[in-house]
Structures are given as C-alpha cells and as structure tokens.
Length: 388
Image (cartoon, rainbow, N blue to C red; front, side, top):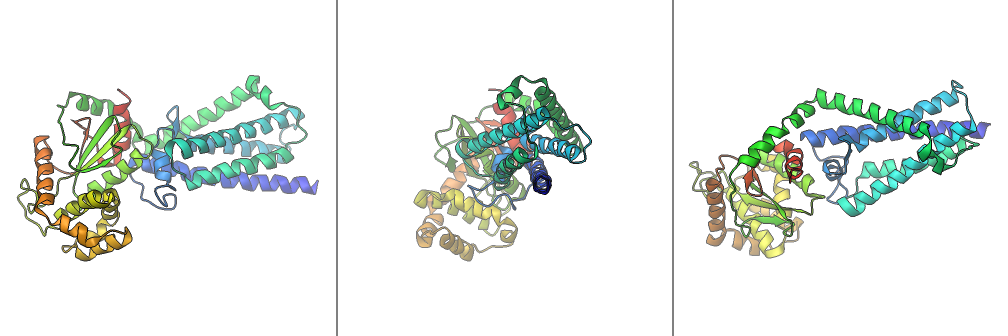
C-alpha cells in the first residue's frame, strides 16, 4: 500500500513537471509568433533550438499549438489522478485501463513528434525532449498506479469515452489558445492577414539577381528576398524571424541583400556615415565567397547589434569574427575593401530602389513586396505560401 502511495505521489510530481514544461513551451510558442522572443534557455544552437520548432508548420494542430494540447492533456490527467487519490470517484478496472491507454497514446504521440523534430524540422527542442521523456516516466508510473486494468489499448479507439476525453481536451485547448490570442492581439493579426495577402497578390513582380547576396537553400522553389542593414534594429528582428522560419522550409530559397543606410557605399542614401555598415556588408559577402561562412558572419553581426551600433572602426570586431569562425582575416579583408565588393553593394542598392525599397527591412516573396512587420514575418509568409 505504501509502495502504491509513493508511486501515486511521484506521478503527481511528474505531471506537475510536465505541466510546467508545457506552460513554458506555450509561452515560448506565442512569443515566437508575436516576435517578442529573445534567444534564451530553449535556443542553444542551430541544432538545439526551440525557436525553429515553435515557428514550424508542425507546431500547431487545428490552429492550436501542440504545447497547449500537451498542457491540457496533462491537466486533465492530473485531475483524474487527484480524484482517484482522494476517492472522489469510483475506481474500476475499466477506468484504470482507460487512463493507461490514454497515456500510452501520449507516449506514441511523443515518439511521432520526436521523429518529426529530428527528421523533418531537423532541430531538437530541449524542452520538447524533456516532455517526451516525462511522457514515458508518466506512462511507467500510471501502469503501476492505475492497476489492475481491464482494458485493452486497442479498444480505446472504439470507446466513446476516448472520444469524449479527446474532444474535452481539444475544447479546453481551443479556449485557452483563443484567450491568449485575443489578449495579445494575435487573433486580430491573423484576421488581418487576408488584407496582407491581397496586397502581396496585387504587387508588381520584381526580378532580383540571385548571384548578388547571401543565398540559403539555393534549390528552393519559393524565393524570399530581403534587403537589410546590419545596424537597423528592425532588421535584427527580421533576421531572427526569417532564421526561425527557414529551419523547416527546404522549399524556400532565402536571399539576403544589402541596403546599407550609409551614403559611403549606397548612392541612394544622402547621409554619409562612418562606413561601418558598408564594411559589415562587404565582410559578410566576402566571407561567403571565400569560406562559405557569410550567413555565420551575418548572424554574428545581428546577434551583437546593440554593442556594435556605436562602433565605427570594424577592424577589431572583424578580427574577432575571423578568430571565432576560423576565417583568414587578411584574405577576407582584402576582398572586403576591394572595388568589386563595393560595386556589388551598389548594385544591390540599385535593385532595392528599382523595387521601391524606402527603408529596411524590405522583404519580397517571389519578387512581390510583403507588407508585414518584421516580427510577424513567419506567420505572414506561411499565410501567403499557403495560398499557392
């Protein structure tokens, strides 16, 4: 009896931990959707990255985040456990088998989600992995606590109780998700997507030179082109949004082009600055040409944008980048100060002006302007692509 009591207490603790993990993932999901997320606990590297999982097309089911569904499932299961523990409900073999089967389905769902994360999105979400582990911990404990059980797991698919439980969890999740979206304006933003889609559809098509700029997924059949400046705060937000968006989009080709807000290299900007914005652009493009590390340099600049805003001489910064990314500083520097590099920056600026760029960031999907805030790009781009 004491053994069972200990297992029951452990199951309560395990469910509470699972609920805590799903609360974090729910908050993180909406932070990514709203563009308010900053890289932190859950985004360790390009491989261990919750941002990519949250912005993935697989992060929601029926427009309800998987995290919210997991949260609601564990809450409902905790209530059932407490009812059993406090003798508020009659405990039968059939009921025990029913609960066992639900947790078995949860464990199989965790395996499926882990497979999607590893092989489809190709990233691992640390907090998601923790929920998968606890799904099996919970299954093990449930097998002991809810025993004996007179219920074959296969039978659950044809039992009305299963459908009632599933619909109940979906309704609770739908209510929670809707409440969060209404509170933070995400529902309004999604309702306004039709207008954004119409604007994109009516926009003229511009042809951009694929040989100019950084290219990710060159085999992609859908093309997203961005004009940006490394010291532009909104461009940093766009870079973060597009980086997350691209994690599971092998069908999308992303082209990053410079529109430096400095007349030193951009003839369409009247103000001549200290040239640092131009140097950052040429350095990223030269790093790509010489060592195929242009995107690494680009993300390095954006990740440290706040500390680089006031830097005018990029020498020590670029030396640090070269050491950090194992680059040949002299070789890239020679390329970055060349007339060829600055001519390419000018050509990109000319492309931007021809396409009607008036500020940064400016994003185009298949040559058509996307009128979307930088932090809303993942949702906006998905919505437009879904119309194809």
